[in-house]
Length: 319
Image 1: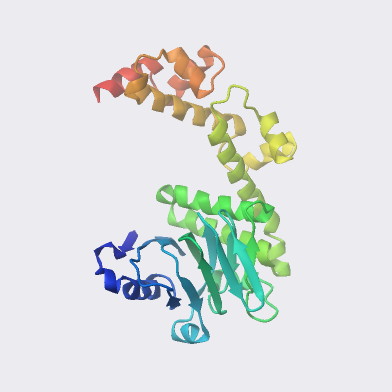
Image 2 (image 1 turned 90 degrees about the horizontal axis):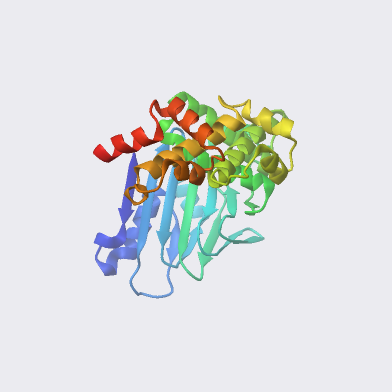
């Protein structure tokens, strides 16, 4: 279920005050400050993915603080993963200051005071992970999780980011049991990135393999139409052996070749349905989707859809 809130329907003079109330309801109790009294725009989109809470926030510039008083008023029952989507912000916690760029993530404890601000506008996504799921996996010497930045080019950060993306993309087609398992994998990845307990470290390699598989699949989806795309090329790009690449796909219900073919077939079916390609020959459609041989394209297409590409186009046109 998606919950959306916006200042658009609010009286301009009351927008910032109502924004403060919306943040307390949908995010955390926060102390918010502005340096001007001009118009303020803010939007919140929130959804629940099993045990995970995902909140997208876009709003005008202001300073955000979560003080000790805020924490006592509304303690968090979770940890959060903050993903910077656009623009740049600064974040401070104790003596630590971080500059957060697009693609960077901050993993932190909402029960530790912090402040953040920007010279532009906020555009971010917050993933909230139940404390009861993540805390047992962490090596928390002081009982608190200090703010940890995962830069967009950081290997661990990329694994966590891609796993989060995969969860969001596939949530609608994922069973509750599978979503719960995916959440457990996410917790293991996050723990590995910020400091896992010795017991959790034993499960880290398996979680990283699952996340690496998602990275490989995304790479295939983005380049499948390239006629020269191959397993050798992918293995080289990720710095792994062909054997390791094929072992990754053993974690799923498909193989590298079958997944690549399914992506190409999906692209071909899209092209055949598009009116602007109605005069493109089916052979050209196959080439455009990444198939180097027309015979292979026709055979695999009929295996998948039960009809030839031409018949598929004709049926789509009638519909």
